Length: 140
Image (cartoon, rainbow, N blue to C red):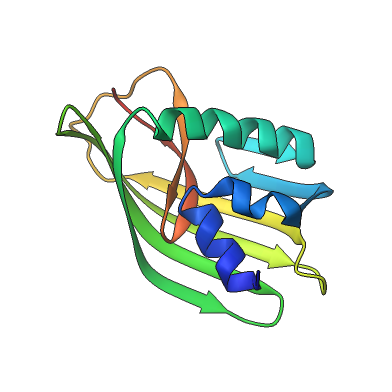
């Protein structure tokens, strides 16, 4: 996979496609939320997020991608539904940095909840939108 395809897959929550590109030196920082370091920590969290994604309806939208020789940024939105009711809408931006072999060096995820009327559930869940990965507080 090329850098853009890896970043889009990760931001869309298609984590398993990206596992070959995550190493023991990869880190994933969601400022103010979480910092994960190393392949095992990142994959473990991705699996937990996938469990949540499999339990809800979701829509991911990519609004913008920016790519250069070593990085890809994805900007987008994600909507999460429970029983057809919107419970969370998140805007996010993921910034991916790669080495020369297309291995992920770092992921920075910035997430903003768009709906102040939604009361957060106690579980924080990584949300990936066709543009970005993010930790989102979701209600279900």
